[in-house]
Amino acid sequence: GPLMRIELITTGDELVTGQLVDTNGPWLMDRLFELGAQVQRKVTVGDDLDEIVQALRDAAARADLVIVSGGLGPTLDDLTVDAACAAFGREPIVDPAQLERLRAIFRRIGRSFTSNNERQARVPRGAEVLGNDFGTATAFVLRERGDGCELFFLPGVPRELMGLCEQHVFPHLRARLEQAGVHFCYRAVKCYGIPESHMDQA
Image (cartoon, rainbow, N blue to C red; front, side, top):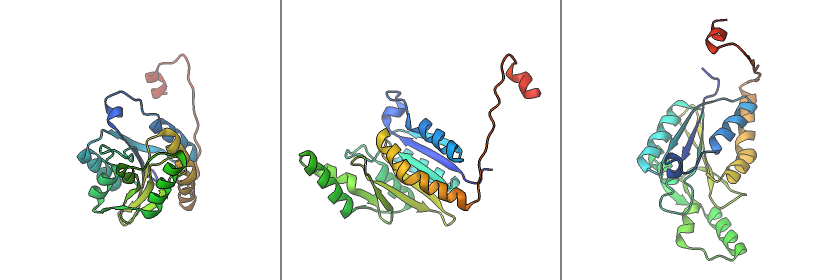
């Protein structure tokens, strides 16, 4: 199997009803492949707590690195923090530094800070908090399993996800691959005028 198993979980009702096409998944797969890490599995789940919990547990049991996108907003259908807590036996806490970061953003844009905005400062206890230089949702990392599955929880907004990947996920992954002594090369062979079955036999 692969030296490093990577899985993606994208969440959101809009993705499973077909109202929105997931652009984060393909972008991530492409960038990870360039880094020398191929994604083994991608799962999309709606805004359903049990489904997200199951997807997180399944991925953490198999993978070395899991990237989760979506469900970190301020509304009650943003379930990712609660799902992460339920999946791995943690409790949600409000991170004081993130709460202050959010209040500062709202002060700057002159908008009143409502109690549901505080939801975006919630993280599972014991998480490594990444914050977010690109928006309000708080990104964080959980490390589960003794042999080290890392789960990066990122916002679903593409601009925010991309920024946080460039800032945190990709440098971390590069370091992990270098540590493992992984060097990546691939060859693309393009064939014209020959059926796939004949090509395969050749």
